[in-house]
Length: 250
Ligand SMILES: Nc1ncnc2c1ncn2[C@@H]1O[C@H](COP(=O)(O)OP(=O)(O)O)[C@@H](O)[C@H]1O
Ligand SMILES: [Mg+2]
Picture (cartoon, rainbow, N blue to C red):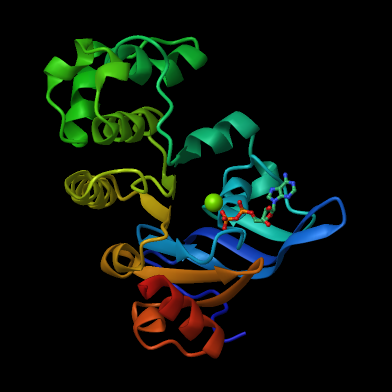
């Protein structure tokens, strides 16, 4: 395929490489023949119709699911060679619904540390909040009193506690207002630059996919149908992608 191992590889290593991935539920293939790579240090946006298999692909990338066939490496190491908890810390994930536990913002940021039997220092918690554009005064606020945009920022800050090398984002701005969407886009870009975290971002917003992505993947019916720079959405190379882009415009 033309897009085999697409991507600007900043230091020669792909953050994640997939080779001929098949994933089935019972006997139904959900993902078939997925071959490609996510360049280390880059932002890749992932688009496609609902049900295309985008979320399933991200779940394979952090070991929540395992492929039935094919090979996957994360930072050059076979995914099966990782301890599951180590993989989950290396590859963080944030979801559309930013689930907050009852308690303060600090309690929420402390959660990943607690799960490791540790405690997050308040100073460190404040620094993480700063990374997502919230002041230290938020540490004592009740998490459920924050706006959706603020909760999503806390959720992103919480994924940073484990210092992930790769961050998977599943439609994290879908339920936010325009201003919050812009803010979250900017904070993800700044995290990508500051910590060199590889970002893989599912979005149904094509404008966002084009504006944010160094590379773009288009998935349909469980397949990777195209990958490349913004031109693959601006001037689609296949009828299938053209129809998808047209459909999203209305
Ligand atoms: N556990 C499951 N059991 C049955 N079908 C599933 C399961 N998980 C996902 N699917 C199906 O796989 C397809 C891809 O789902 P998903 O990865 O969530 O797509 P997307 O994120 O692109 O909307 C959908 O048709 C969905 O119904
Ligand atoms: Mg999904």
